[in-house]
Length: 101
Image (cartoon, rainbow, N blue to C red; front, top):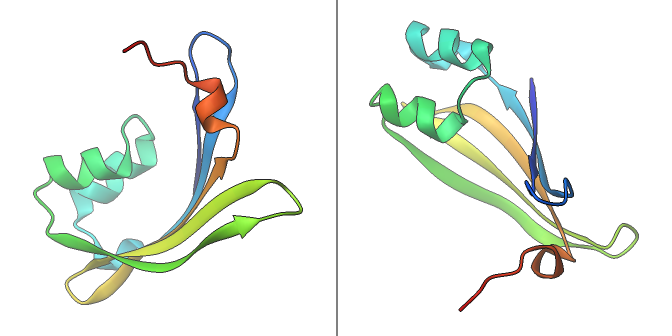
């Protein structure tokens, strides 16, 4: 299992949290070793390892009790589920990020 938080540098506010279940049996050994180090994102590791995958969106929605948006998806590798991922986005995300145009 792996948990990650994306934090805004200036304010330190958490923008996104993600929880992943990883099924190591369906991934190349070198990819599993890099995942265990937790130094790069799952996408970067899969890309650098040239692992062919696709995402299968399972759910997307809004949790009114917590005021968050969420999505869950699977990453499929060689016709097997290699990852189950849940991402939670703060509804105030756009308030937290100020983009100068």
